[in-house]
Length: 363
Image: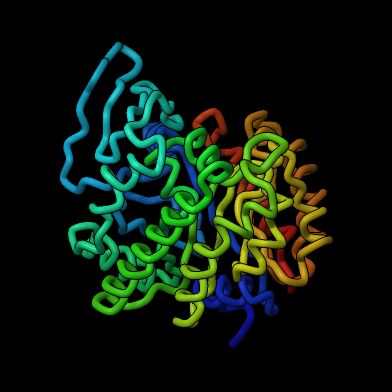
């Protein structure tokens, strides 16, 4: 394989295995209104995606729907000029913003304990084909193959499947006072994920890799201790990750917030790459690289707040302080430490990509 003619598939597969490549990888997440603004400004064509425009090495698709009551039409409980409050198919009451992209506000949950889980959720979590978007997966996989991009199945793992049902507060209290309930939720969702993967991949073909989203931290702290991770969450991670590894696929795990204390347990569970490495939460890419870079690849860890400034000198300093070091074991993909909002100008982001890849070349 000639180094200077690597495709995104080849490059990303080697980065996830920490094998020699021509340059670091490239991928990014954006808030929805960023693409709309950049298209409106004429930087990006109306039907063009970010992955095509910037030449990303990767492309994913999120094919599963894990809501308890499939086909349930969310009920609007309250609506203002700025927000709308809805009850969803998990019985959760969530407030979303109309004017901008934001994480929904958790207002109330039908499920607050084991009895609620066993009545309202568990019986409905069957591997129904209606939970899978076969057509979307097929189209995205085909497009990625045509463009030579690494294609990943994208979705949430057990931690991110539990809290939409009962909220972080009841979920975490449950882990402490009724751990068997929490273990049952973990086991149920892990089995559901594996069963749905088997259905999808047997019919449509495997992806090049799997990307799990698991936001297990907030500012300065993980939601759970390393011991609680190993006792309750890790068995679900092992079940899903081992299943993926048995198919010969690498695993990327996304986790917002401060999750450094959980990283050794995540490595034990089998992840190949940690993403997003959120600086403002306390994560430190250079420290993680020093401590785990021989066993783990990384994606992210570049402070998106520096991009907010639209100051090229500041962006250059942030990139120059990190990339020459973290590219050392061949295991790094350029990405911000969150998602790019529309306050970042197109020119600033383009500079970020160009300068980052310049610093990230090996040849």
